[in-house]
Length: 206
Image (tube, rainbow, N blue to C red):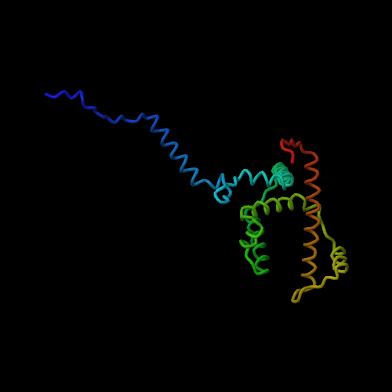
């Protein structure tokens, strides 16, 4: 019988479970990075990537302080409104959305188009409407417009009713416009007081 010791016997070794797990993890990570590359890379120029972090850094240089201050003010307003227990019924928000839709439709557009032009989503709009309506509830009692103010505005601006609009309806529109202006001024004053009394620590200087 020939001696089989001269032959090399090749045996495939079973990969260890740890090695299999590592390889699988690497494959999943690579696939995840490929499909989620938009999370890290904003664009490529002739194959050279521009990272989203670079874009964010540039935006922070340009308007970081304004954006941060706006976020701080929003947080202060939301916290204070919650503290004051100012609430809204869903119907109130929907009514305001419908009102905005009608106004935009009157201008020959749609709410979706108007939001897209401003880089906003419907969720952003609902958030703004919610804060605005809550502020109206909180500060509305401090705002009033007299008939004399309406008459003075019409006289100074030499305003006339649009065709087909009755004078009383026109005056009601002017009243609402003046009230919104006063409410805006009152809200700005209220937010300024909140900011002045708030304890805000900045960890980034723009």
